[in-house]
Image (cartoon, rainbow, N blue to C red; front, top):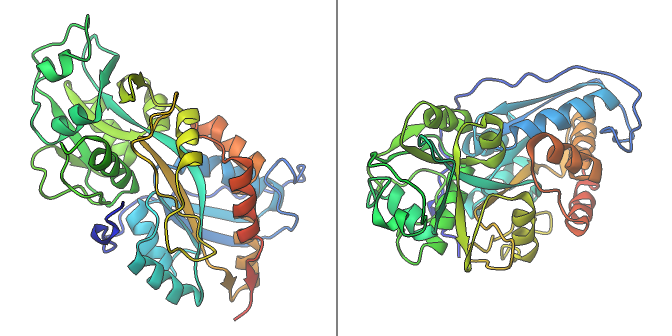
Length: 367
């Protein structure tokens, strides 16, 4: 059960704008981001940094087919939600579904229940930098003990017991976590809370727990990856696509049942498909409570579902058309395959895609 009351929404907006590409073209709208209606407007959004690479692919395809400009600022989930509810953004991305308070704020902004649909499904990698070592096995308890400061050396017996034959150095462990409000942090701490058999006592939170002392806090996915690559003996967590793109870091295979599984988009998709919908959500909301203790063959429960937020009605017709067209493309088969190719994400299942499309199809303009 998620303790969502602890997720905070007040957060200073700090980030660089990912500038949208202004393109036009006559591509096949069924496969190239077309919505069936062109627009020359500008649409501003932002939020979760995890889906940034996918957003680049989505924006380029949509703009080429439809014209106009889609901007997506990589400011983190927390700021994305705040900027959406303050009307600075027409749409936003978040890796942690809206809390009850955030739903209320969004409903006030939109004048009706907001739209919240899954757009990007991805494993979270626990990555490290350790000379001569590229892969390690760890159960959730060990990962929790490392980030809680109970395991402080790489050759600690708790790590060594799960990595027979691996030469582990007597190097100090340096943990790296997000300093900004982050949906990736929420999913990581949710996994530790549910799967570590009590080793992690902190509730899931988009902000790194104040009760966990030590470690280096860095802003954004790029900040975490940069901190890891520059620090021997470091360990941190980030969207798997960013770790793969870097290519220099070691990656942990987490214990799932009796096996150790590396980050896998297929494994993340399996867990999403088997996880229950979050309770007491409006009909326009597709929030899911991820089963962090899943043990089916191939499962990878350390994962995130990144959502897109929108309003069901916009006063400006161009904005309504662009939000509807863009989100329709994102959750379509073509959009999901574009994200999979660019960012290594798991495409939404056909049933999830159909449900999301049906919700988005009702976006209209009017007061």
